[in-house]
Amino acid sequence: MTERDVKSAVREHYAGLARTGAGCCGSASSSGGCCGTTSTPVGLSREIGYSERELGEAPEGSNLGLGCGNPLAHAALGEGDVVVDLGSGAGFDCFLAANRVGPEGRVIGIDMTPEMLERARANAVAGGYTNVEFRLGEIENLPVADGSADMVISNCVINLAADKGRVFREALRVLKPGGRLMVSDLVLRRPLPESVRRSVEAYVGCIAGAMLEDDYLAAIRRSGFTEVELLAEATYPIGTSNPDETEVALLNDPALSREDVRSATDAVVSVKVAARKP
Image (tube, rainbow, N blue to C red; front, side, top):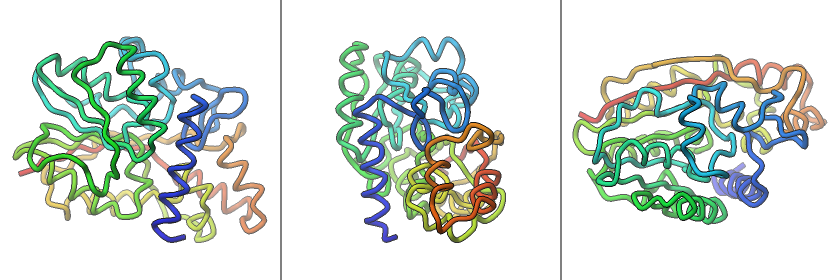
């Protein structure tokens, strides 16, 4: 797959989620479960670190269950801060950040899927948010001015980028000196089988695009960030006895063995990572 193929597949997949309101990494099953669990998007968000207060704060329809952690859990945002969200989707994390930075602050959500932007903007209107805006763009080429943000956040999106180093360099560029990066993402404990890495179904389902954990942290450091810290790591419920549609697609792929699929899903972990611009 070329980088263009990957972006096209990811955009098409998440456009469908925006239109239907279905969520979850890899898409929701007909029963409403997420990523191999029987949870709803709200239930999955609770499992990955969002508080009951946070789940009740954001506009209805903004939480599609697409995250793999809560990047705001350790964010310590202040009144007046400027936040940029990479891959903002329907706006869930943006609205939570907006509540923290207050009317003097500003939150900018970046997404490459027009359908997601339309949904996020409608959610902002419904929630009465005036300190949030959503811009069309790719996270490798952020439509944000140099040195304008206090914090860059992202939730289960950077793993989808073909050039993750470029994403981190862009995050560094838009941050003010001393600004912080706070991300939740999926990484790998061990390499994936080559057959899975080539699978478009796995890629849009957040599996095949993930990097090895050490390589992910090294890419952040190489981009120029300092104080890179792994704050938390947890297994992520992809697969198991109630597989999501991503795993079903992989299991039905004649080029993949069941062992390859199991090896892939068992290798995935969710991490929270913090870093700072010098």
